[in-house]
Length: 198
Image (cartoon, rainbow, N blue to C red; front, side):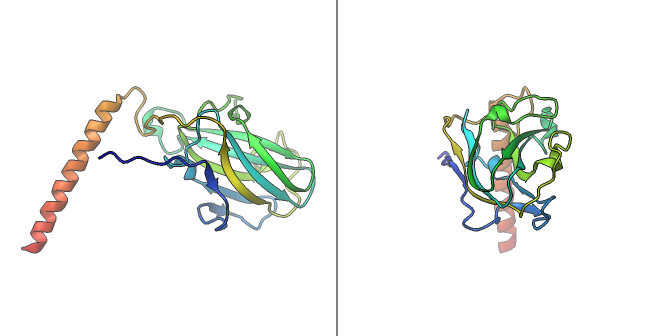
């Protein structure tokens, strides 16, 4: 029987606060940083050509938010280069606003646009000036913002390539290796149980 993962559009409704996020300087107005690896989970990988959407509530006008997608951050062994893609969101007014970002809005430091969510390892929300000080001159002034309804909008759910495979690896070969290792681990576990009974 083959396990299937039900793909989700809702990444986080924040009903449980920041439970699924790593928080750094969460009360510091200029340096707060919230990061999740949820978008690396097969259930939450972005659909092809989807927008990343959310609501944000700020207390001051003229803020700039950085939304970051890291790709292959801990997968150097694959031969793919870890890359950080940043979308800067200008929030001209205070209050609650809806944001929807296309893949093309996420740019690397060299200006390359994100082309797929398949190899994303983390999603970061942080002040724009902290990440792109040459572009964003002013630090975050207001209180740490509130987020709601973080989700994928539009796009199409397509099969995801196996992100752990090395560049040029054949899927069939990798699956065969995994099956062999899994079977070996099961045999070893059964053997240990039998030894425990003796």
